[in-house]
Each structure stands twice: as structure tokens, then as C-alpha cells.
Length: 327
Image 1: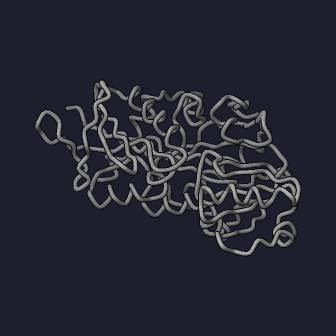
Image 2: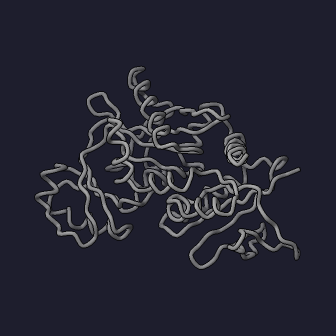
Image 3: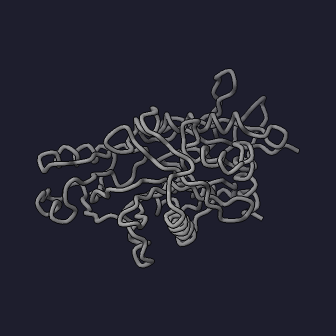
């Protein structure tokens, strides 16, 4: 019997349009011999099931059900394709865990932790995971530009602490540009992180649980046409994404080992994609995404294809892993 799969997409952040694309890719690639997919749009003003004609049917948040043809429809599993809040930061995970509905993402705590760049680095620090020098700033804190520059140097990166797809990220070359970059980051979040610039090869590493095993996918090298791997580079084709990456055997071995170790230290499940830059021959962690993009332009699907895993197999595996977690 086919299982009913709710594919949640949208969200409350600047990433909602990307999420809608990711969710549609999942819907299109779903194995319809095993599953019946339902596109669920989650927005601040409404949660609705959207059918093929574009008609909307409200979701009952009490039990995450929908009335179709005068009959209640419930779901066997939720495929989480929401980037940013509330799908990547733990809110939806906690909601589904309370309802006892399996979902394809990591648990509530792991989602909340990894969505917070500062907290993630704090947890990983005792394990000697290398990362950039950083400075933390909260809204309302005094702006001590000289202190920041003395800590991280120039150029540096100013980032929203809890945001994705490079929203709220700026590369700052001179002290005069620091204030504007901080103001931009505060439009996305009330906490920011300012990091030193790491000059080296940038790679993206997908780590997933595939057939019950932690699996590192082929590595992607990022060569941005822009100043850094920003939104336009990620989604508008203004970058080269080279899979497999042009690394030495030693570099590849090191970054695969670190990426797998980070996944296991943080007790992640489901999909993840982490970014690293090589400095002095060693991979330094930039950030981790637990709901990586699944659009045709996204990196994780490219990596899966190079590993011989089709989108249909990738998504089916995620669903089956989620269903088995409940048993």
C-alpha cells in the first residue's frame, strides 16, 4: 500500500522561494509506486495542502491532517524541505516529534543547534574541529570596530548567526564598510558572527545516512565568479561547482574524515551539507546545513548523482530511514 508523504516547503524566512523549488523537486521525483506525495505550503499566515490545480486546503495543526473529499487525510511521514525557520531550526521537528509523525530531518535539538552557527562552533571546539577566528555581536551591543578588527583581521566576513543561502552575509575589506555589513546582517537575525577570511580552496561535503550507514558523498569544489559563494553564486549560476573536487588524495581523505566526524559528533541524521576551506593544508569548517537545497542547481543532488544515487533513490531512502527511526 502506498504511504502518504507530506512534503513541507516554504517557511517564514528569506529562503522560502528556494524551499518551494526544493519541495517541488522532491514531489516530482517521488517514487509514486511507493508513495503519494502532498505538497504542504507552510507560511506564517497559513498552512495549506496545494493540489495540482493550485487549490488550497487548510491543514489542521492539531494533528497535521487535511480534509479532502469530506474525509480526513493523515500522513505516514513528512519530508522536510523547509530551509531556514521553522523547518531547519527545530520548530517543525519538535512539532512532529510531539505528534509522533516520522520526518526526514534530524531531531529538534540537532536542528536548533546546527542552525545556530555560534553554538555549533562552541560544541565542536573541544573536539579540535578547525574553524575561522570569530567575534560575536548581538543587537544592542556597542560597536567596537577596532576590537573586532584586532580579533578577526581584514578582510572578514559578517554573517547573520541564524540564516542560510548567504542572506545577511558580507565580505568586508576596510573598516569603513564594517558598520553597513553589520546592519545588513541584523536584518536577518538579532545575533551575528564575524569571522576571519580564510584564503584557500572551498569545498562542500554532503554527509547523509544512506541504507543505515553514515555516507560521505563525492566532494564539490566551489569556485565563485563573485567575491564569495553568495546567493547569486549558489542559485543564479554565478559559480563553478566541480564534482568531484580537484583535491589531492591527502586533502580528500582529511576533509571526508572531518565531515563524517562532525556529523557523528553532532548526532545528525538525514541530509547534511557542510562547507570547508583549506588553510595550510587543513580543512576549516565554515557551517553546516541540515536541510540543504534540493533544486536542480543545488549541490547535494549533484553529489548524489556522482555517487550513482538518483533523486528518486535519495528521497526514498530518506523516507525509509525516517519510518524506520520510529520502529
